[in-house]
Length: 117
Length: 113
Figure 1: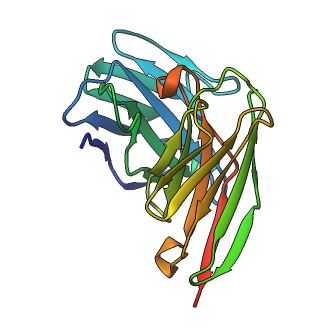
Figure 2: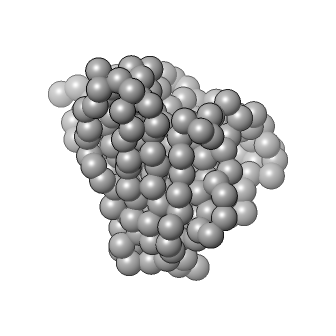
Protein backbone atom coordinates (compact mmCIF):
# COMPACT_ATOMS: atom_id res chain seq x y z
CA UNK A 1 0.00 0.00 0.00
CA UNK A 2 0.90 3.64 -0.25
CA UNK A 3 3.43 4.91 2.26
CA UNK A 4 4.27 8.33 3.57
CA UNK A 5 7.78 8.67 4.96
CA UNK A 6 8.48 11.38 7.52
CA UNK A 7 11.94 12.35 8.68
CA UNK A 8 13.36 12.80 11.23
CA UNK A 9 11.45 10.79 13.81
CA UNK A 10 12.68 12.98 16.60
CA UNK A 11 14.82 16.06 16.94
CA UNK A 12 16.19 18.03 19.83
CA UNK A 13 17.34 21.56 19.19
CA UNK A 14 18.36 24.69 21.03
CA UNK A 15 16.01 27.61 21.32
CA UNK A 16 16.40 30.01 18.40
CA UNK A 17 17.47 27.45 15.84
CA UNK A 18 15.45 26.24 12.86
CA UNK A 19 14.33 22.70 12.24
CA UNK A 20 13.25 21.13 8.96
CA UNK A 21 10.89 18.17 8.77
CA UNK A 22 10.44 16.24 5.52
CA UNK A 23 7.41 14.35 4.32
CA UNK A 24 7.63 12.12 1.26
CA UNK A 25 5.03 10.08 -0.57
CA UNK A 26 6.96 6.99 -1.57
CA UNK A 27 4.89 5.35 -4.27
CA UNK A 28 2.29 7.89 -5.25
CA UNK A 29 2.09 11.52 -6.18
CA UNK A 30 0.65 14.02 -3.76
CA UNK A 31 -0.30 17.45 -5.02
CA UNK A 32 -1.53 18.22 -1.52
CA UNK A 33 -0.12 17.36 1.88
CA UNK A 34 -1.47 18.18 5.32
CA UNK A 35 0.60 19.14 8.35
CA UNK A 36 -0.75 18.50 11.83
CA UNK A 37 0.54 19.28 15.30
CA UNK A 38 -0.29 17.21 18.34
CA UNK A 39 0.45 18.16 21.92
CA UNK A 40 0.65 15.42 24.57
CA UNK A 41 -2.66 13.72 25.22
CA UNK A 42 -4.42 16.00 22.77
CA UNK A 43 -5.91 15.65 19.32
CA UNK A 44 -4.33 16.38 15.97
CA UNK A 45 -4.76 19.98 14.94
CA UNK A 46 -4.35 20.92 11.30
CA UNK A 47 -1.70 23.57 10.84
CA UNK A 48 -1.60 24.00 7.10
CA UNK A 49 -2.18 22.45 3.74
CA UNK A 50 0.75 22.43 1.35
CA UNK A 51 0.11 22.59 -2.35
CA UNK A 52 2.61 21.59 -4.99
CA UNK A 53 3.59 24.58 -7.05
CA UNK A 54 1.74 27.16 -5.00
CA UNK A 55 1.61 28.72 -1.56
CA UNK A 56 0.48 26.75 1.44
CA UNK A 57 -2.86 27.42 3.07
CA UNK A 58 -2.54 28.05 6.80
CA UNK A 59 -5.22 27.49 9.42
CA UNK A 60 -6.34 30.37 11.56
CA UNK A 61 -3.87 31.21 14.29
CA UNK A 62 -0.87 29.49 12.68
CA UNK A 63 2.04 31.85 11.98
CA UNK A 64 3.12 31.62 8.36
CA UNK A 65 6.53 33.10 9.02
CA UNK A 66 7.15 30.71 11.89
CA UNK A 67 6.11 27.53 10.14
CA UNK A 68 7.45 27.63 6.61
CA UNK A 69 6.02 25.08 4.24
CA UNK A 70 7.47 24.19 0.87
CA UNK A 71 5.94 21.64 -1.48
CA UNK A 72 8.89 21.26 -3.79
CA UNK A 73 7.68 18.34 -5.87
CA UNK A 74 4.80 15.91 -6.23
CA UNK A 75 6.41 13.65 -3.62
CA UNK A 76 7.99 16.03 -1.12
CA UNK A 77 6.71 18.60 1.33
CA UNK A 78 8.80 20.21 4.06
CA UNK A 79 7.88 22.03 7.24
CA UNK A 80 10.52 24.33 8.72
CA UNK A 81 10.03 25.56 12.26
CA UNK A 82 11.98 28.81 12.31
CA UNK A 83 13.54 30.25 15.45
CA UNK A 84 12.12 27.43 17.50
CA UNK A 85 11.15 28.04 21.13
CA UNK A 86 10.20 25.59 23.89
CA UNK A 87 6.50 26.19 23.26
CA UNK A 88 7.00 24.78 19.74
CA UNK A 89 7.88 21.42 21.26
CA UNK A 90 5.26 19.04 19.93
CA UNK A 91 4.59 16.02 17.76
CA UNK A 92 4.33 17.03 14.10
CA UNK A 93 2.60 14.70 11.64
CA UNK A 94 2.18 14.95 7.89
CA UNK A 95 -0.35 13.22 5.72
CA UNK A 96 -1.01 12.88 2.03
CA UNK A 97 -4.21 11.96 0.19
CA UNK A 98 -4.09 8.83 -1.85
CA UNK A 99 -4.54 9.06 -5.59
CA UNK A 100 -6.28 5.70 -5.60
CA UNK A 101 -10.00 5.75 -6.44
CA UNK A 102 -10.74 3.19 -3.74
CA UNK A 103 -9.39 2.21 -0.38
CA UNK A 104 -7.64 4.32 2.19
CA UNK A 105 -8.01 8.01 1.50
CA UNK A 106 -5.27 9.52 3.57
CA UNK A 107 -1.87 8.21 4.57
CA UNK A 108 -0.02 9.50 7.59
CA UNK A 109 3.66 9.78 8.28
CA UNK A 110 5.06 8.30 11.48
CA UNK A 111 5.45 11.73 13.03
CA UNK A 112 8.33 13.88 14.28
CA UNK A 113 8.78 14.61 17.97
CA UNK A 114 10.36 18.05 18.32
CA UNK A 115 11.89 19.05 21.63
CA UNK A 116 13.22 22.60 21.92
CA UNK A 117 15.54 23.22 24.85
CA UNK B 1 -14.46 25.96 13.34
CA UNK B 2 -16.06 22.75 12.29
CA UNK B 3 -16.17 20.44 15.27
CA UNK B 4 -16.26 16.75 15.91
CA UNK B 5 -17.08 15.89 19.51
CA UNK B 6 -15.82 12.59 20.91
CA UNK B 7 -16.60 10.71 24.10
CA UNK B 8 -15.56 9.29 26.44
CA UNK B 9 -12.16 10.84 27.02
CA UNK B 10 -10.90 7.60 28.50
CA UNK B 11 -12.29 4.10 28.68
CA UNK B 12 -11.33 0.95 30.55
CA UNK B 13 -12.71 -2.35 29.28
CA UNK B 14 -12.10 -5.87 30.40
CA UNK B 15 -10.50 -8.28 27.96
CA UNK B 16 -13.14 -9.88 25.78
CA UNK B 17 -15.61 -7.06 26.30
CA UNK B 18 -17.01 -4.52 23.86
CA UNK B 19 -15.41 -1.08 23.63
CA UNK B 20 -17.71 1.69 22.43
CA UNK B 21 -16.59 5.19 21.47
CA UNK B 22 -18.98 7.85 20.26
CA UNK B 23 -18.65 10.89 18.04
CA UNK B 24 -20.97 13.67 16.93
CA UNK B 25 -20.48 16.19 14.18
CA UNK B 26 -22.07 19.47 13.20
CA UNK B 27 -21.31 20.06 9.55
CA UNK B 28 -23.80 18.24 7.32
CA UNK B 29 -21.37 18.64 4.41
CA UNK B 30 -19.12 15.97 5.94
CA UNK B 31 -19.37 12.78 3.93
CA UNK B 32 -16.46 10.66 5.09
CA UNK B 33 -16.01 9.41 8.64
CA UNK B 34 -12.85 7.45 9.49
CA UNK B 35 -11.59 6.08 12.77
CA UNK B 36 -7.90 6.10 13.58
CA UNK B 37 -5.82 4.20 16.11
CA UNK B 38 -2.69 5.80 17.50
CA UNK B 39 0.03 4.33 19.67
CA UNK B 40 2.40 6.60 21.63
CA UNK B 41 5.02 8.24 19.44
CA UNK B 42 3.43 7.01 16.23
CA UNK B 43 1.27 8.53 13.55
CA UNK B 44 -2.42 7.58 13.40
CA UNK B 45 -3.38 4.47 11.46
CA UNK B 46 -6.72 4.03 9.73
CA UNK B 47 -8.95 1.40 11.29
CA UNK B 48 -12.18 1.69 9.40
CA UNK B 49 -14.17 4.37 7.61
CA UNK B 50 -17.76 4.90 6.55
CA UNK B 51 -19.77 7.08 4.20
CA UNK B 52 -23.24 8.39 5.12
CA UNK B 53 -25.03 6.22 2.59
CA UNK B 54 -24.77 3.19 4.89
CA UNK B 55 -25.72 2.81 8.55
CA UNK B 56 -23.15 0.23 9.54
CA UNK B 57 -19.83 -1.13 8.38
CA UNK B 58 -17.96 -4.05 9.85
CA UNK B 59 -14.38 -5.10 9.39
CA UNK B 60 -13.22 -7.93 11.60
CA UNK B 61 -13.74 -6.94 15.22
CA UNK B 62 -14.36 -3.29 14.34
CA UNK B 63 -17.78 -1.89 13.50
CA UNK B 64 -18.90 1.64 12.72
CA UNK B 65 -22.51 2.54 13.36
CA UNK B 66 -23.72 5.69 11.65
CA UNK B 67 -26.84 7.74 12.37
CA UNK B 68 -27.17 10.44 9.74
CA UNK B 69 -30.25 12.11 11.20
CA UNK B 70 -28.61 12.43 14.61
CA UNK B 71 -25.24 13.32 13.09
CA UNK B 72 -23.57 10.71 15.23
CA UNK B 73 -21.32 7.74 14.61
CA UNK B 74 -19.65 5.24 16.87
CA UNK B 75 -16.89 2.66 16.91
CA UNK B 76 -17.48 -0.74 18.46
CA UNK B 77 -14.53 -3.01 19.17
CA UNK B 78 -15.72 -6.54 19.81
CA UNK B 79 -13.75 -9.05 21.89
CA UNK B 80 -11.39 -6.28 23.02
CA UNK B 81 -7.78 -7.37 23.53
CA UNK B 82 -4.87 -5.83 25.45
CA UNK B 83 -3.24 -5.02 22.10
CA UNK B 84 -6.18 -2.73 21.38
CA UNK B 85 -5.01 -0.42 24.16
CA UNK B 86 -4.32 2.84 22.33
CA UNK B 87 -5.80 6.24 21.64
CA UNK B 88 -8.64 6.32 19.16
CA UNK B 89 -9.68 9.31 17.11
CA UNK B 90 -12.78 9.78 15.04
CA UNK B 91 -12.60 12.23 12.18
CA UNK B 92 -14.69 13.73 9.42
CA UNK B 93 -14.08 15.36 6.10
CA UNK B 94 -15.80 16.51 2.95
CA UNK B 95 -15.46 15.37 -0.63
CA UNK B 96 -15.35 11.69 0.33
CA UNK B 97 -12.10 12.03 2.24
CA UNK B 98 -10.22 14.09 -0.31
CA UNK B 99 -10.21 17.19 1.86
CA UNK B 100 -8.66 17.93 5.22
CA UNK B 101 -9.75 15.89 8.21
CA UNK B 102 -11.25 17.35 11.34
CA UNK B 103 -10.36 15.13 14.28
CA UNK B 104 -12.26 14.37 17.45
CA UNK B 105 -10.61 14.91 20.80
CA UNK B 106 -9.53 11.30 21.21
CA UNK B 107 -10.31 8.41 23.55
CA UNK B 108 -7.64 6.64 25.51
CA UNK B 109 -8.68 2.99 25.63
CA UNK B 110 -7.20 0.57 28.13
CA UNK B 111 -8.01 -3.12 27.98
CA UNK B 112 -7.40 -4.90 31.28
CA UNK B 113 -6.91 -8.67 31.66
